[in-house]
Amino acid sequence: MRIWDLHTHFPTSNGLASAEQRAEKLLRCADRMGIERLCLYMGFPWSQDPSPEKFRADNDQVMSVLKKWPDRLLGFVYVNPKHVDPSLAELERCIANGPMVGIKLWVAQHCNTPEVKRIAKRGHELKAVVFQHTWIKAGENYAGESTPMELAELAQGLGGKPIICGHTGGDWEKGIRAIAPVPNVFADLAGSDPVAGYTEMAVRELGAQRIIYGSDASGRSFSSQLAKVHGADIPEAAKRLIFAENLIGLLGPIMREKGIKF
Image 1 (cartoon, rainbow, N blue to C red):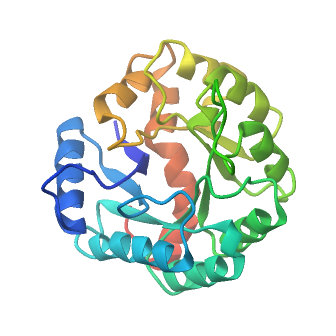
Image 2 (tube, rainbow, N blue to C red):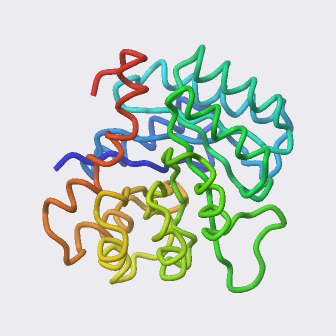
Image 3 (cartoon, helix red, strand yellow):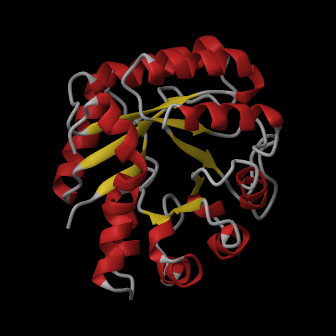
């Protein structure tokens, strides 16, 4: 069964100085788990509210390792909607004129804003996959952290173009219900605990064609996140969709345009 991981980051282990060393460790672990390709976001150290200089440096780190492992790694450009014009310029640099195939939006600004909509729409023009982190915390979200409810609001204004709901909101039972009525929203399984019932509920409420496996490695282990799908009480055909086929379907247009084999 093919496995493509939607959601990974550079390891932060001590002693790994360079982007290449960190990517090599990530791939070594992925090899043990039978993971064919990884989508890689952000550099190190992480910044929740990066300046244009910081997110450009992060993207340079990712692009430096794409050159060495072009058949294993796929890069998503990290931007900050608080700096919308530099973010749009970064899409041109890294996607239109560079090797990246997607966009990563994190917690700097809520996603139901005109700035995020502008970034998402330009990404869709470039055939990029758009990924928005979401979370519903028991206490209080970060100041700019989006919820699945806000993502659903954004998605309704994208003309049916796809967008991925990162972590399905963490509180996945609420997150699945929030995005269910909006058919262009895909659920990312990454990052929460590997509890029983998550994937089964997502398949029941969304359909397997709207669910994508991701790990959030190195923040989570590959094994714990793979278990959400391997151990789910769903048909084998649904597991194939979740593990690779849905993501390949989203990435296919831009990968073909860039001549990336898959």
